Amino acid sequence: MKLDLFANRVHRAYFAGGMVRIEFGSVQPNSQGEVPSDGEIRPEDVSFTVTLPVNGFTRSVGALRNLYQELIQKGVLRKQEGGQGAGQPQQGGGQGRPQNRLQDLTADDDVGGGPLV
Image 1 (cartoon, rainbow, N blue to C red):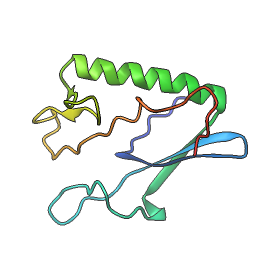
Image 2 (tube, rainbow, N blue to C red):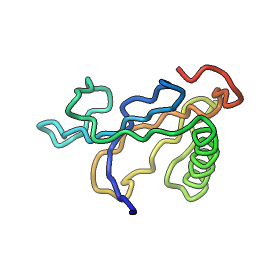
Image 3 (tube, rainbow, N blue to C red):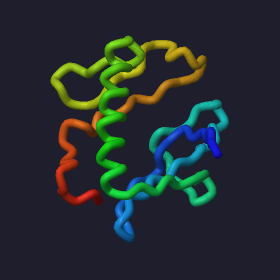
């Protein structure tokens, strides 16, 4: 069975019971039609959870890092000056809706066995 799920954000990622759990959700737009980037996350906003063994999670980090670099190379995101922070979506973003700034968390992660929380 193949699932095609949509979420407009990752709400939370945590380590519990020997597994990495990533909660995804769809936050509803506010009255201006924008999805708030820093609003409070309500339980009803969580749509689904992906649960991975630690080794599956570490392989996923590499795949996500590669995708991040590819999006920068294609001009979908642009890297901020100073090496800190994350790709800034290019104007328009191809979606016709406001784009939020992404934060680069790949530079300081410790995939080799450090704490996940």
